[in-house]
Structure formats: C-alpha cells, structure tokens
Length: 166
Image (tube, rainbow, N blue to C red; front, side):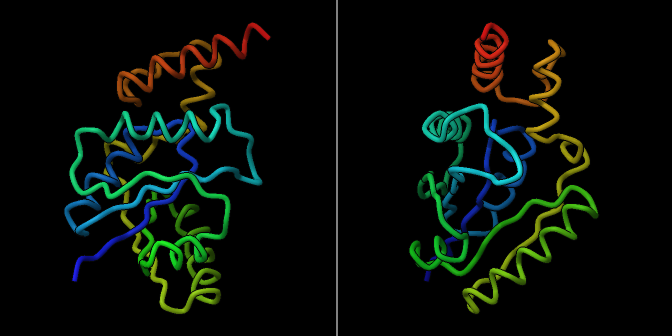
C-alpha cells in the first residue's frame, strides 16, 4: 500500500526552506500532497491563493512523487480525512517552531485520532529562511535571490513593486 503524506503551509511565497522539506519528504513517502492554506489568522498573505498554488507548482515541477498541489480552507485534520491520509509533514526550524507544532499535532490528534505528524528538521543551509523574512527583505529592496527559486524570486519582486506603488 502506498503511503501518502500532506505537507501543508501558506507558501507565501514558497522558499528553498520549503523545497528542502519537500525534497526530503519525497524520499520517505510514495506521494506528497502539497496543501496551500487559503488563509492564516496570524498574518495576511501578499499572494492570492491561486497565485501561491501556481508558484508552488512552478517551484516543484522538477520533483517526482508530488501527487497534487491543492488549496484548502479547512482544518488540517479534516483535509487529511478528505484526502484519505493520516500523515502530516511539518518542517521545524527552531525550538519555537517545535513548541507550536507539538501543540498543533496534539489538537489534530484530538480531531482525527489516526493522524500523525512527522517533523522534519530544517537543514542548516535553510534553517533561517522563512517566507516572512524573505518578504520583509524584499520590501526594503534587499537581495532575496539566495532564498527563492528563480521564478518565485521574479514573482515576489513584481508583487512587491505593485504593493509599493499603491
């Protein structure tokens, strides 16, 4: 039986940090579903859901075992049930991420007892990269090229330019 796991996130935008987790996860699982969250209560996205799905597809074209890339606006536990899987992949960069993720895993387990969260530690090369930092650097015209695939880099610069002209 093939094992499918879901890798959820906001991906606003997708970074080399996300790609590091995805690349390592596809070595472990037969199929990966990348689930792009429609919203995040804690922060506003700069790319629309449709744009983030498109950019995520562009950034992962070279990878095998990506079953699909979908948008979602539901609890992760409900999404996992709907997609008929019981595995969530979560990237962890710091102890603060771990603290948050362990709480999220416990809540998800309450909602969907068969659901397990697999934590993948970020590689040392990508452990400091976050979409929030990348957007902040880009906003002030800093160089974000080392943190993003080429097509994502250009899309972010265009988006920031539009935002700054409003």
